Image (cartoon, rainbow, N blue to C red; front, side):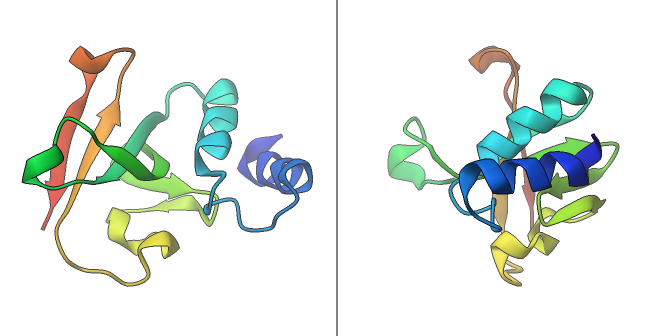
Length: 110
């Protein structure tokens, strides 16, 4: 089905042509079902006061140095180049999601 086929199917199922707002995790899970080598990545809104209560604001994929979402199925080198971030060039803290919290790996882009 490929990334484009999965995206088009989910757009019909979700009733939207903009999966990255509200359905990004649905897209990621559908892609990973077909392509398990891609890693799930979350960027969260948090501060020093609530580091343990992260709320993901965007979920996307990572593989071989590139980041992917439904709007950038060919991938980008810097996650801030995903349209979700709207040209933001400040610091972001990402975490790759493993099978449990012990597998989570954090990395930052400055």
